[in-house]
Length: 456
Ligand SMILES: Cc1cc2nc3c(=O)[nH]c(=O)nc-3n(C[C@H](O)[C@H](O)[C@H](O)COP(=O)(O)OP(=O)(O)OC[C@H]3O[C@@H](n4cnc5c(N)ncnc54)[C@H](O)[C@@H]3O)c2cc1C
Figure 1 (cartoon, protein in one colour):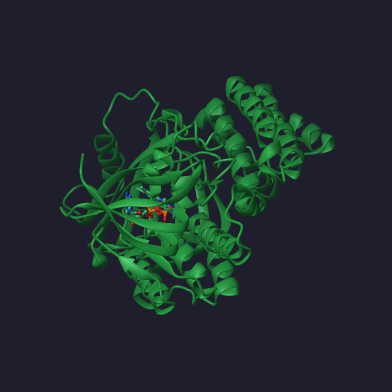
Figure 2 (spheres, protein in one colour):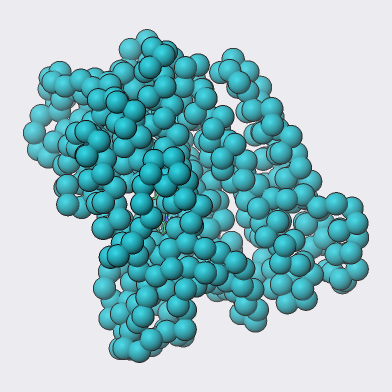
């Protein structure tokens, strides 16, 4: 075993300098706390990530209002987004959508520097190995700098923003931390691959992000085309890890890409693949002395796998909750519980509802989606509402029934989404206000989710 020596202590220790970590650190430091942020990457690489690069305006407005952070601008912005298009082979269904396709690296570096201006101490090239615990409380983290010896950083509160591998949470034992989930199922992990390409001529995707649901991609996976400005595109592909596939991800990616841009007509600027935890959020994301946010807490849209915006928002709530707990000298699970309530209200319920939509898509397949879009069975408001988990009234469903002939099975699916959304609204309204009431509530949620997954 590697020798460890105790070296450092701080009020709040943040693991990971992605969007969740950097905003957690900045928020807590702005409130006057001593904050340290460790990241396994070199300082210059922090903020860089293989990504589709799209982010909605909502979370950015949220950061502006709550932290005074300026909107992305200049080299941070590759293109602005004005619409999001759901596409199948025969139908393009444009919906209003506003936001940016970013250049994540300069944006991430700007946020890191702003955090430092508020006094955050950044330790780069520093990998967090595991949590340090004492009687059911997280009291810090064991880290390792490059090839140097392991050492301990002690903290009143540790915030795990280590992304898809949730390094700290998974090192916590069930016996000491029984209310925290430690595992992730294969079917909740999306694998993805993307390339940023430079074209010789301009493309028709300016100000758009396009999600293509295609027969050749394992459902409910998709191919994306995001504009990175004139002559530049970010294109990618993704599906869930539990899917049986006949072809490799890159092979299928190139097959689809070359239908639009044959090889030789573009240059690849950057290429890479990664996994994404794409599921409804952790139902509890706190323990004594511990909070987790971003991908590490499954704060990702279960259908589109967008997680940048929710990581920023969750980061804010993590930093805020940690700062409040320190101020009131209550670092217990109860002292941090409000974080869960904030997450559930802000996007937790909505992500749980999107999970319904995702499961439904799995059932109706691309052909069902195409049928619904092509025949205008849903108005745009209804489609957006359904995707966001808005329940439908009986009259609305009867009107759909008339249009949906002869595919009545689709109505059944729409009805199930609608009922499920209604159920979740009521359940999340009763999200427990103390850890003592959590397990029975979670059992109800799990039962419903299992029912939904079996039905689809
Ligand atoms: C191919 C792909 C495409 C995507 N497209 C989009 C998109 O278009 N829009 C969108 O919103 N989202 C997208 N996402 C998801 C998005 O990238 C993530 O949801 C978002 O980056 C999550 O932020 P985070 O801070 O939680 O984690 P991350 O951004 O992953 O940051 C985690 C940080 O922790 C550090 N770290 C990890 N382990 C340790 C450790 N043990 N010790 C110290 N540091 C550690 C890492 O170096 C990293 O800096 C995409 C993801 C992928 C893979």
